[in-house]
Image 1 (cartoon, rainbow, N blue to C red):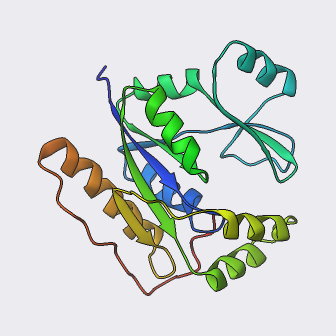
Image 2: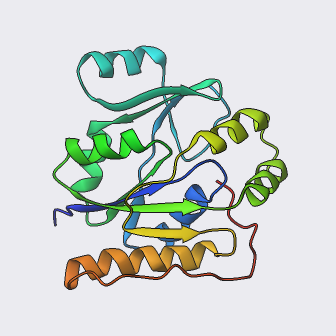
Length: 200
């Protein structure tokens, strides 16, 4: 089995399309979504349900890379699952909304991580959050405003007008270019169809 030392850190505030872009990447066959641990809140297939006791045990053992409480739930990144994905034949994709977490993951692993920043305008984010019926809309909008832009990113994609599949293709091109040749700057795709297909 090959040891893949390359992954994608997909960064951005709520409603920029991190989850839908990740799903599009997975359909390309070269990527696997990292599923964070979660306690409480609405069950979603992007997360692995667990208990506070389990997270406390992992934290005490130094096995958590990130642990935070957001939107009435608790989320965590565990080292064991990330190591498992890095030993697979696909590139792990991690959705992140805090710059400090990006830095910590890069410093805690030997993998090469590609920083991809997703963004959209506030009107689009508000429309997406409203459409999907999040009960914690005010908190997510507050977090949208509080999420800073990255000072350095390998690729930036404006998802206001970019379809998830086009975003995924741009990210795949970035990863393949790094593996096969000197990195060439890639301009973000700007598709003007299905602009509300991105939601998280």
